[in-house]
Length: 166
Image (cartoon, rainbow, N blue to C red; front, side):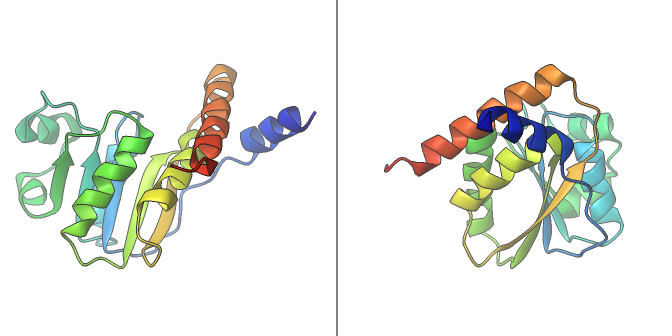
């Protein structure tokens, strides 16, 4: 019963896009439509100075990325960093933490799909410095029940693994 109620709460209370809150950087996790476009929009509006895209396929070259997502050469040069190390949400958090060690940011905007935000936020809260403000900016979607069910179970598994001593 608790599991079913938890799933229902998860499914009906998906996070929403955030307002125009400025942050030092925007972190975009690959894997869903609209995520990269949202990150680019944030930088173009001046709501973040830099964008880090975590989980880019190692075969993708910066110029291919720019062409695919309509990112101007100027924006790619000044403000976009592609991360090639992550293969899942947990390694996204590690890759971003590593990138953040090289920067003096006090706030970041995390961009991912609405159904993925709870788990991404949980993984990032474990990996990132406590004093870093993380603004969650969910990209709206219309997920299938199967997607929600799978993600809810991954969220539970992540919560259990984070609770284990390691």
